[in-house]
Image (cartoon, rainbow, N blue to C red; front, top):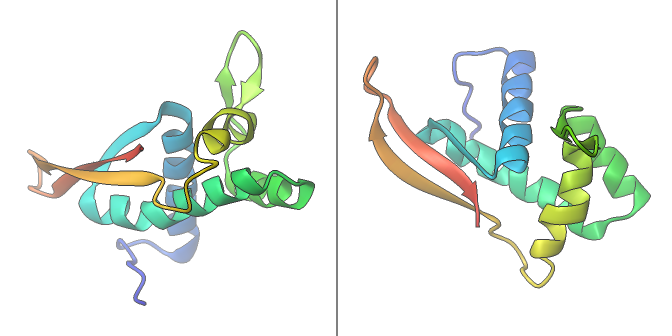
Length: 120
């Protein structure tokens, strides 16, 4: 399978996908270009699968990918904790396909096709 490069080097591309995956888990929905949303789908689905496993090894693998961002200021809960405590248990009976890509139109500046990626 061919990977899109998005005009970036490997480190920048990985950082972009990490940031977008963290945002999807944090907010539940992110608007980005259609191509980025399609590539991000597999990343987020893999993270949710790790969250469903729930063991220490899966938590460490997810922690190595997700940004260390506080999801809830009141409780101090991080995005990783949100993934394992809230998001993954919601999909316990589902075998895959945790995200949906919805096309929204074109961006005004450069006419890039835009889409939402959201958790189902």
